[in-house]
Length: 568
Ligand SMILES: [Zn+2]
Image (cartoon, rainbow, N blue to C red; front, side):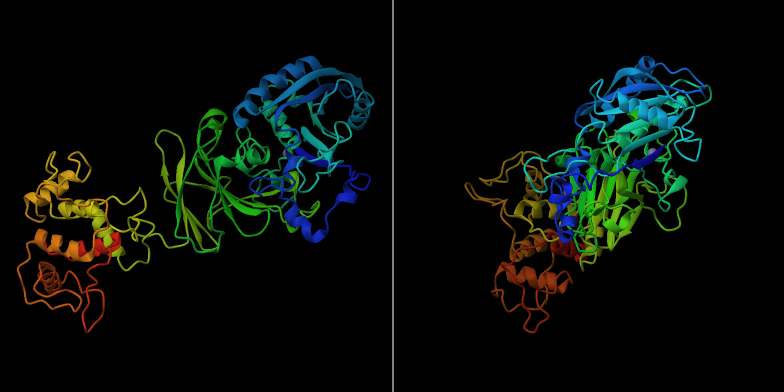
């Protein structure tokens, strides 16, 4: 399962003439990708759309452990790989396997040379060479390696940076796109479960997918992520969504990019994340502000081939394609197999699936918190919240507000459930219709059925009509004479709300203070004064003179505070 990189055609290719200046490379690398995420995406996507033809060879060596028939191998590959990639790509990619022939050679290098001699027959995008030895001894020092994908270290063609159509890399065999498999990965061997897995793993490399791993780069450390077919999994499962996006299988519209970079303040946003095969957003990107460096979040659930994943939840990765992240950056970026895919975890967690977060868990990245809020019971995925504020109370968009205590109280009473599942929208203006509902619920009034309360602009079946009717019945709102209008969609003013609230609470006329901007002798003045005496309002200024701002609109947060302070 080694991803070996051999050969370099850069110096001899036309790439040299078109190589942009070094300073521009870091940004140029991401230009062809619609979301600007994947380095040299035009090259990584060269083979990942539609049919991808591999010529299947077997190699007969003197050390044979098994007889490998190329026709049977091609059939076996088709049975194993086609349904898997059909699932993972949602029908966008299909590897195909053409039976080539058997060559004879002394060792693995000889096998590769023998296949080279027949390289143009049959025409294909790459070759799979199935060895008749159980492992790939001879290819690498470690004789237990059973699969390897080889590729030219750089494309032997070049993308036209910023051009309309990329001038795609050269074809097999000049690009060195070949997969070697030990016989143990080709013919069933009792007790060995890696048979199909090694093949699809190496095809992943042939699509330029890297390993994902926690530990420092190199050696067996690269196989410590049990959630990734390209790392430590022992069965055929999925791979990080960034690989599917890099292959072009995840359309940009199914990727959510958070509008603020990690480290920048943002009030917060809610994202529903769906797993492979489901409609909707399948990957959330949190930018870092650096080209090619970003965080990804995705939903993994036990369905399809992912039935075998060790842990369900939201998977988190740091993707780093900056030149510093790998040993062999090409044209300003770590691209393809060098793309660093680092599972993210919380301090203090350990194990192979520590980057999978469950409901209620969160991770803070440069001051931005990502919390898993919900797991949809129908298996459709997870909801996550991303924002820079602390997360306290019932809602995530009121943290730090002077009204937060009141808002949480309001939610606890059932008077409101917020403006969506997790937000209160504290700064939104309250309409006269919404005010009627707030007040009636706060007063414990049951909605009156089918009443327009005499208002010409109130539909008796409107969502607020029953509550408005209840307020009219309770004397908190005067019934409209025929033709009168309630103006339900208009923002309620502080004066209007004060009158309705004082009536709802049935406050006694008191010795409350007068406010300089409220006409004395009016019902508004009496209501505001009574509310002030009851401690419900202090006006809109520290005073003196006291001011009430009677014509100002009222926000949802202010209503929460008014209701919490109201005597019951
Ligand atoms: Zn590998």
